[in-house]
Length: 95
Image (spheres, rainbow, N blue to C red):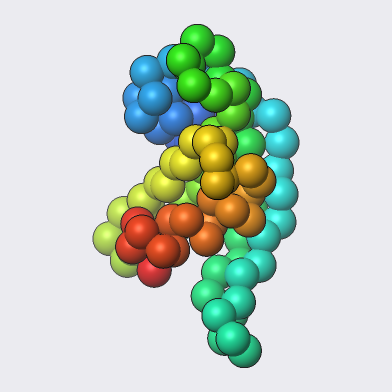
């Protein structure tokens, strides 16, 4: 597993207290009006032992000091990687 995916794997495991495995990658681009607010690759992880869902989405970004990681569970209204990005933006998790 490459170091980036391993870091996300470790973050998902710590954040949700269950095992996980990398299931795939999706390219996501989000716009607010004409302005691009996000472009990047979102990783999907299959969870094992989580009581509410079997998937989570995760990605990293650089805040200028050290890498930061975002994790979002696949729970309604989050159904796919694009939903996860929109939810993270709306919550102020990253900008």
